[in-house]
Image (cartoon, rainbow, N blue to C red):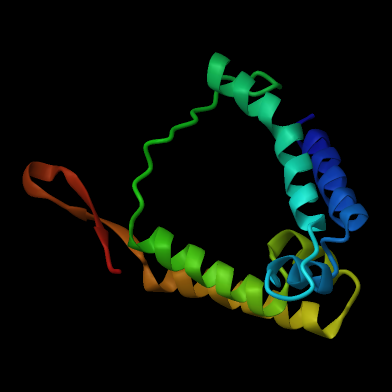
Length: 152
């Protein structure tokens, strides 16, 4: 049942990206071009996504359970740290230069477009680079406690 729900959610997400034009890097770059020919279409897509997700998040925060009844924990207490700043900066730079982010990028890979293949290779290399660099590791602290060490 979980796999079926995941499949349906993925199909809806992919369909929404296709329908909204988010798989076309030109649309994304037009949204980011605030000094030129700005297009608000991405803002409407984001607003629609928030409007759809907000009731589910509100329910999960209130009940501590997903819509399917699984226990969830939603916290606002995550600190802004080096890995978060570096990761979000790299994401933003890549998104701004290419107009492609992970969701639409994976849909574009299915089309076989050369820029999508380059994106996918970069995405995979980036995932493995983060793993191999061990940006965040747990090290032994005093009296057997653990501490988080950031290398950025």
